[in-house]
Image 1: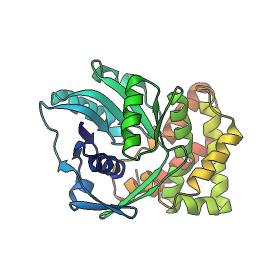
Image 2: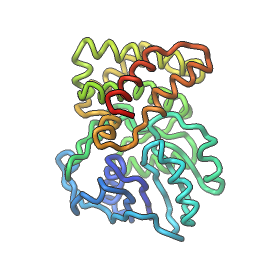
Image 3: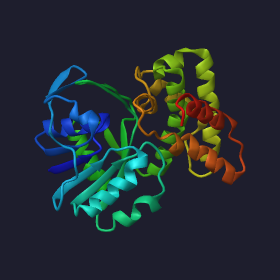
Image 4: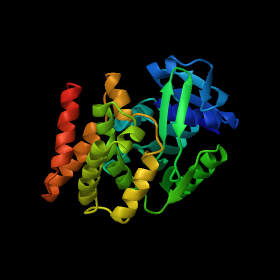
Length: 291
């Protein structure tokens, strides 16, 4: 397949490299992080050859599949760039770190088979080494024809992507996970594993988890809270990497805090449910990184 990966940071490089290793025609589109890479990359303990890299949008090209792997704040701009540069694709998939309103992307996907993907794994790219933390949940997409096609493609490339009929609920659960730990990782400058091993930070995680669960359970059918909490800690306690929010903050890039904890605070106001823990963590994060 001819594949374009837009926003090739840690996840995009991982995705594109594994697809390329299975002989797909892959192009990575990225910025500074991509420019610094060599022609090969070490993913955990295996050395791979990198796909073709570009740094500006191509024009008037047709692809079998386009992945958008950028952060949520860049999603609309990238969808607009696909349209403005007259890029055609049979399938379009965006990897989203949480909930996104359909109204954001609907105008851009009228004639495209679209799906989104939630990733429950960790990635850390330092120089030419990419470290991944896998989980039982893996990658999730919807149970549509597009979702099944992409799941099959990724599974053949050894990426654990499965389909679900309740993808919105899974995105909500992913949002709860991110709200519970991403900003805390940045504030404390600790990995997920380190946060779980410390009783004080673990208590903060639980407070954010409970509050975010209360809000999103009003809007989405979620799994049992204590079962979900158990699965959540089993997943993050294995991850010896920092949150993407922390990596963005220390690199002085934009971050997703307003799309995550900011979303919980906004929904809490609409539902008339107080969100003191999310408000406190967002203020601490903004104060530390001088928003």
